[in-house]
Amino acid sequence: MNPPTQSILIVDDEPSLGSVIQSLLKQEGIASTYVSSGPRAIEYLTTARHRVDVVITDLSMPEMSGMELLEIVREKWPELPVVMLTAMNSVSTAVEAMRKGAYDFLVKPCDRVQITATLQRAFRESERRDEPRRHQAVLAESGLLGDSDALRDARERLMRVAESDATVLIRGESGTGKELAARLVHKASRRRAGPFVAANCGAFALNLLESEVFGHEKGAFTGATVRKPGRLELANNGTLFLDEIGDTPGELQVRLLRVLQERTFERVGGKETLKADVRFIAATHRNLEELIERGTFREDLFYRLNVVPVWLPPLRDRREDIATLARHFCQTFGDRYRRPEAHYTPDALEFLRDQPWPGNVRELQNLTERLVALASDARITREHIAAELVREPGGRLSPAPSITPPPAVEAARTGAVDASQKSLQDIRRERDREALKEALRATKNNRSAAARLLKVSRRTIYNMIEECGLEDYKPPR
Figure 1 (cartoon, rainbow, N blue to C red):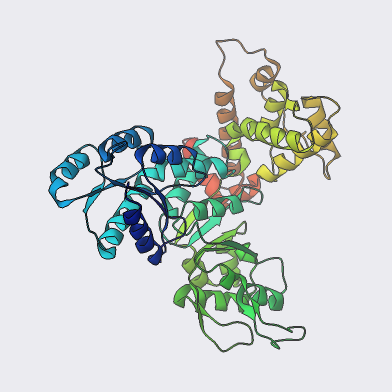
Figure 2 (figure 1 turned 60 degrees about the vertical axis):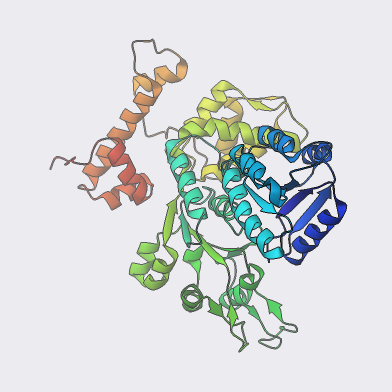
């Protein structure tokens, strides 16, 4: 059975033939619409509210020939495959139509097997032609905003793995957008017409989490008055997102391992073995390698989940994206709170860029919502931001009080840098390099310890070492 999203437009001046083709397609589960002429086909394609995957058109029609219709479709909808219907004595003309861009042709009378086989090939061609546009639309709607190299690399990796059914492990600090990344993979995958179901592995006690994921039978435990399907069943033919997988209790890890290995499971209290036709995506902010060393996370489960790892960078590693995100959130909450004119001033955006953002994108989003909700006028300034930051528990501003910024950095902030001085990007890079060298000196070149000292992930510290050209750096003894 074909997905219900596939749709055919049939164009023929003989209603009886159009009705026969519609009937054949219906038996295959393919939706179709019939029109009796080329002009009506153009009108339908122009005004249709849903996607048309393939056009089947008769070659010989009085008002507009199939060849003329083909030329218009190729011009206006170049990604749309056109299949020509022709009589035996017009095969040469149909071949000419293929040279002009038709996808294929069918000779009348054609049976269901011929039509189905041709359409399946045309569907694949339609999807292939439409893939770049669809991918762009998915990326635009994903919420993973920014043009930094770090984020762009992560997005490209997500889009590549989406094409397969491989299990994905999304890693990154809290607030970096791991669920957005999981939804991006689902929407770009072949399972996009199926459900996306999320289960937070850190939100429930063991017995409740087991029931949430696997479901339960009536009478399985006190209060189980009816059979309940779990998230695994609800995600059938779609994607199951296991969030905060690092917080999964050990007993449940065993059951998850079996599902990943065998793609089968039983409900709590049940004996019936069910198949799991789902794509698995897991996410965590925890250091799973350390949890494995402590014995709280199964190594075999880790390798089953870590088929394709994707790391989302913290906001401090993609500061060039902060202004884009801040403007987006400002517009979003401005519309929500009926303050469409709300905006950050240039100095406010620069101030945001200088903050450490321990809560990453989520923290920036929450701060922007608060600022828009409390704004007395349209302009959100540096002073407004500073006032809110110091009100937070352990209120902080960047740079920290114990750090004295280099004179060049202060000059850059106040606008006193002339053309002969270094760019702000160069200044930041030098500042990061010196901080990294100091951390490596303090930890005797122990990179994991340096990562903890700088409060960044191990992956980030290795990226910083490479970016700063310190691969061969040896601190003085």
